[in-house]
Amino acid sequence: MANEQTAAPNPRVARIEEILQRTFTPQSCQLRDQSHLHAGHAGAAGGAGHYSLTIVSTKFDGLNMVSRHRLVYDALREMIPHEIHALAISARTPQECDG
Image (cartoon, rainbow, N blue to C red; front, side, top):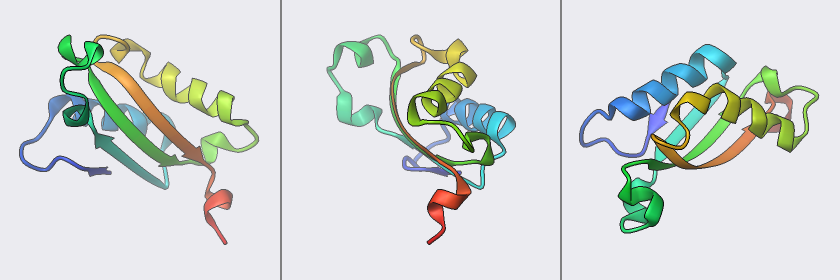
C-alpha cells in the first residue's frame, strides 16, 4: 500500500493499512494521510487524522457505494473518531478497474 507521507513511519497509517489488508485482501490499496492539509481544523486539533483511501477488492462485488463505504467504516470503527476524523473513500471491484 502506498502512503503519501514518506518522512517517517506513521504507526496510525500502518495500523489502518493492516486492518484494510486483513479485512479486504485488496488487489490494490492506496491510503493517503492528508492531515497536514487540515491543520487548524477542529477535528485535527484533537489529533485525529484526515485520510483518503482508494481500494479495490472482490469484497465489494454486488454492493452499492453506500454498502461499500459501510464495510470500510465497520472495519475501521475502533479508530473512528479518535484516530480517524475524516476518511474519503473510493471503493471499487476489480471488474470496475478493468477496461
